[in-house]
Length: 473
Image 1: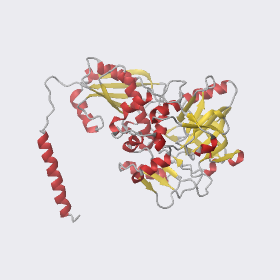
Image 2: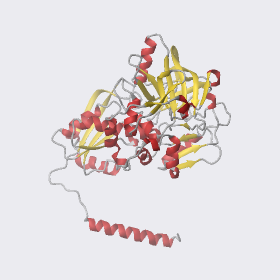
Image 3: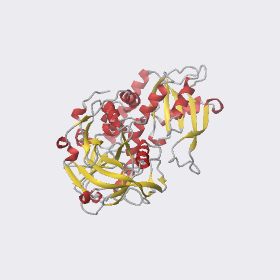
Image 4: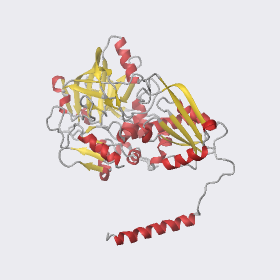
């Protein structure tokens, strides 16, 4: 694992500069309606995950955008791990768990020193139409903010909360906002509305990927995401008071764009359908309406978009889940060495790697992991199984599992309402744990000597060189 200083990589543009070879500048014009998302889908299907920047693109109001769009920012696990200062992308779980245990309070800076408030529009001038917001999928009703971090606070304690939550741009100064009903933001919203008060909210867009991951930490209620982000990045996060809400709602000073507004009691609208992380369209929901009162941004702002249902959106949240699961499971299973939440399983599958677990420990680990709301299937394997290789996991399932002995099925647990397998969608789900840590007594994997492996590598290199000669390369 490498070490780094956050002060040397404070924002999105610094990250892009330091990873320039992984960035593709899209040549020519690209439409914000479907085309940019289609490019992400095509690259994802080919297993390629460069960061994409579109400069020739239009705004919601149809005018040429002065703000470029950056997307696919976190589609690569390797690049996202590197953003955290972790050289080996297989070792995120332990590192993220350790950092989450050591929160660091933020620092507040003056507005004149905050890049995100270099330009300020209030009232009628604060138009969402001037942003290059994308419409991603065919049946979605319009352009959505997909990488907007909604920040609210608990009116009882004043403690902040931040979560990525979608917003449908419905007009120049109005948009829906869908805080998942079980989310802490939704809880804060309900508290304000129960008092007959409008809920103040700010949506900040664009930052260094390490900050984006830090502010997605899974916390108790109420607990500050600013402190959690500081722990992840290893430095105090720089904050500035929002223009409309002051120090009640703080925002990252080095973000790209901030949209400030109010969600008033009784003001709702239909939202959706929307392409969810599951790869399926979610249905229509009743969502709060936000009245936009102020937009601030950098003078050279970039607009960040997540490709919903693609690796771009799955990788960062799955890495956060790995850290949370590691912390959760390690409390009952000291033999735990690693955790993987594969993007192929969306956010429903997890793999635990245990090194010589004690009798019953694998089951303890499975039950702990299955208590995590999003996770629906958990596989526990031994230290000799590569948890990042689908082939290795298939081998473990095929050779180490007797279903009557090693499968645990639990009914009536909390799960994700977005799970498309629920029929009809209900409040609870069934979950499966599989213990594939056992090997039959006396069984030994078939191997070849290390010297033979080295010679095989030499032969492959020589054969590849001869093949290139034949092809004239």
